[in-house]
Image (cartoon, rainbow, N blue to C red; front, top):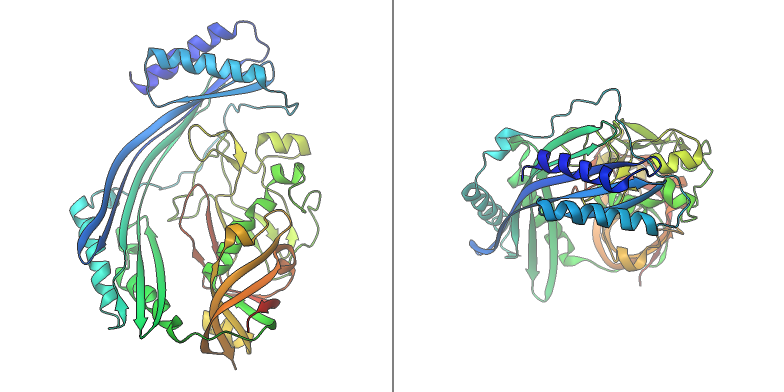
Length: 453
């Protein structure tokens, strides 16, 4: 059955079953897409996958309660299953929070999220890209050994339709990959990793990816263990972005209202250093997380969550905004068609300045440059903000990189770290995109505890 016909029949069946239920309305969230991935080693294909998938999520608002159900098959049996499932789930809901379906915004931003030229790169070309990435990385230095080299792509269409008149959709695509290199020197072994992703063919820089992966692997071969102490620290852009991703939940109004964030009720307060501005930009070009509407169909807009150190707003969906008596920030999140509505950022990043990494090293003077963190799941508490993480990097002396350091642990607290930012760099970079995309320039931190030798 065609999707539009299926939705019309589903809504008609749901209205019939709901009868005279107070405030009845229902909604469909759908997604459909394809993905490709190839991994090579020694020029040979190690892994290869091509898949198409998608489905449809249905939710019904009945007597003030919301019920969910989902399917991957669009037929008559699925219609009955969805309606029965959503109505039964709604009857079991015990929460008292008001639930919402949205009738639509007056207008939506026009975003170019789908690049037809990217779609023209076929499987053979992607395989050759992976092989080229391996060759380029191995050519960097004779100490580089083989590991895995991957290229992946995705193309997706998603939309929301409901009985209140909402009908929005978007289409996007992405191509990315990574080089995972191993460097060997005698008994010493170190790995380097560099990810890339692009929404335009001209943004693909395999040479740059290969060089950075090899450099990461080679730099750690002669690493020593730094002495324990309290250091001034420069967090490289990817490290700072990783910390932001780990603790991004503290900016969720849903978490704050449930007592899972220390930022509840602190809008208007200074919670970070004056040089810190934290942006959520759902319209950022070149990001797979960009979107013209959120998971409830509300038109998105860029916003400063922190501006000049001051907390302007937490991130809201319709439910959390109603509870707090404010306007939604259009951060309702549905990471999949079957997922319930939550709260999440889109493109979430610290606003950069014009300072290069070299400028930031000079500002640091003497201290540590941290280039890698490990153990985020076990060593970070996203509620309290505390973290204790294995790290790698470099000693910095007189504003210049010195010896590599490894086998150290940095410890601190994310809330306190925001206040301890001395300077923000201009080398903004992003982690791999998903439902949210996290980025940061390098951040100079006045002090962090380091456990070493």
